[in-house]
Image (cartoon, rainbow, N blue to C red; front, side, top):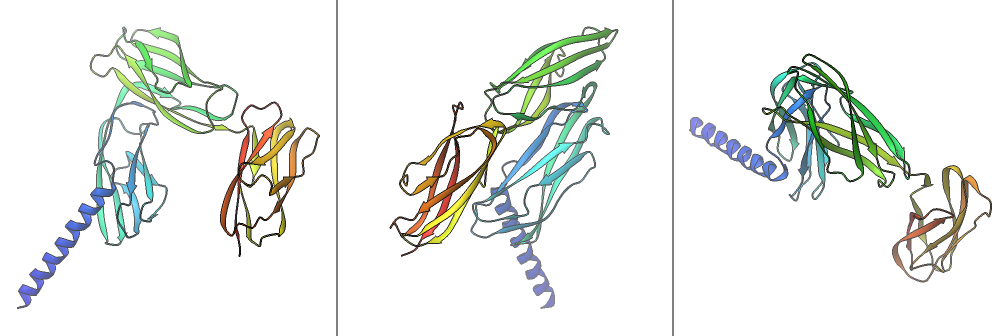
Length: 327
């Protein structure tokens, strides 16, 4: 009888584990992270998305790798239904060379304690070296051009050459300048330009260095940066809280730039008769703007986008006002 109970318990645990693994498989967008062939010193990254398609929250206790040749980080450890988390995987191309295999290990603590592994593979070639390991634009103010450079060094065949730079991002442009060539040592300077029309926000892309190496012609190179606004509004969301019809409430925003500017108007589409902004005629780099809200008789939650027009600036700025109008 005891043996039967033990067998039944093991069978139950196995069934639970199998179901849990099947559910996790449905959540993860890739079952293998393959970097392909990458250069020494490169900082190319891959991302794995975990999307909770189930009806219960999932909690992750730990994310790690089975080898020091790779590193994995996650942006959040609790994933609510419909939400997602992103794991970023990066190879250590400075301390490791040639073929490297590892695993991303994800330990779930609930709803079922289980472990999931994702294989990671890469070939770190020793003949091509990037310095630095990626193109870093840093922070580039919107409307201005950004530039960044990477030195490319090759050691091997004397006839090795770069034939092309493949770019999919229309805001990026590459300029390749040949450097010292001696025997089997070949050097280039790659300069990347970010167009001033690039949109606001983070930039993360990969370009491909195409060489005349028939065995491994393509070498990826990561591009990173952030296009920052020339003028910012704080806070981006103004919460007026619960208010009653007919009530008058006063809030303020701070509009800040790097050089003096003038605010022409602040308006909104649906509740234009409810908001009044006290604007200054002077041009200054910082404006503290009081905004009066006369509450209409429209009970319920509301969220309104207010448009801020800046003199001489084609694209307006925007912020939101939210709250609840009581009965």
